[in-house]
Structure formats: structure tokens, C-alpha cells
Image 1 (cartoon, rainbow, N blue to C red):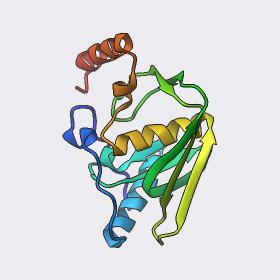
Image 2 (cartoon, one colour):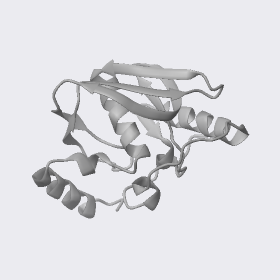
Image 3 (cartoon, rainbow, N blue to C red):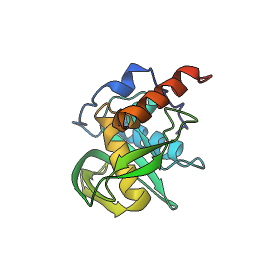
Image 4 (cartoon, helix red, strand yellow):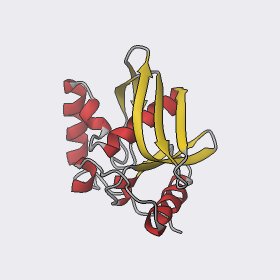
Length: 163
């Protein structure tokens, strides 16, 4: 299908909770292909549907060459203590901040055939699962930052050439 342009901070679609996918049709199948095409580019660990302008609960991932997607994902479990992990976001280009994340996470959803999909892991996979499900709830990683770091990040956003 197509590599889609990434929406950036300030676009209202990024701050809106996404609707669940009720019917898997040709439009949803095309969305999945676009999410996969878009996440395949180098340096991308995940792309959520709102990042390409679609307010539906879906995301793709690209972790250590393992590329896939999930529809209607729900973050069902996390474990360990929150720890600051360096994190960036395609929708907030050029910024990188320590973000509190759990070291392990599990997401459950479905594929385009309605089969259950279970994604779980630690490290980058855990971080991506939390980051992408946050996107589907209208939350950016900037919203998770400690107050002092958030002030710095917001100043960086205002001073960026893309804002």
C-alpha cells in the first residue's frame, strides 16, 4: 500500500482516544498494510494508527527485525518497577527523554482474521507496547515525563523547527 506521513505534536488526532475496530473490512486491511509499510523504515520501533491520522485502535511494530501488528490492543499486564528509559517518538521528532516505563509488558488484541494476538516482552518490546497503547489512548510520551523534564521537553517542542 503506502508509507504514510507521520502526524506531529499539535495534531488533535494524537490527543484523542481511538475507537475500537468493530468490523474488519478492506479499509482495515489497507490500514494494517500502511502501518506495516510505515514501520518498516529504518529506526522505527512502532507506529500507531493515530500517528498516520487514523483514529482506530491499531499499531504496528518492528522490534529487532520482527515486524507485525495488532488490532484492538489492550495493555493487560506490566511487571517490575517503573524505571526511566530513554525514549523518543516519531510524532515528536528530534526529542529524546527519560520516560518512566515498566521493564515488562503484555498486550492482547486480534489480527485481521479475528484470531487472538498476544505480544509480550521486556526491553524495547515492553517499551514499544506501552508507548503504542498510550498513543491509542491519546497519550504521548511527553505526558508521562516527570514535571521538570516535561517543562524542558515542552520548551524544546516550542523551539523546534517543525512545531
